Length: 99
Image 1 (cartoon, rainbow, N blue to C red):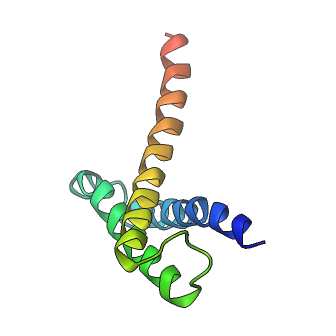
Image 2 (image 1 turned 30 degrees about the vertical axis):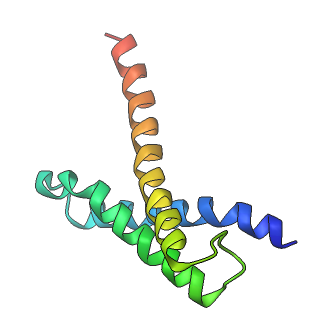
Image 3 (image 1 turned 90 degrees about the vertical axis):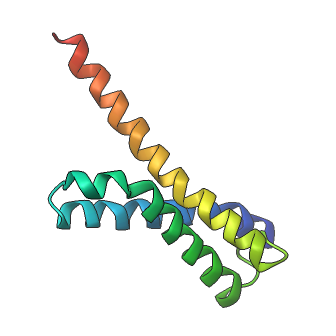
């Protein structure tokens, strides 16, 4: 059962970061200055979630030490940014075909 929890922790962190970044983007009304810092905020939030997961539920994140948890959390946070861009670019391709 613990193997399944290790597999689900990375996408769970990415989903939480994606949701929080979406809320923040809505709150700042698409501010261009904020958009530049979205990857940094996503990585920082992922790092925090990785550390919290490492200490709060030690078996859920596949890390032997806190440094590995930081790397997994940061990568998961950046994954949320990449997923957002994939969705955005796929939607943009549909608009370009109609012109």
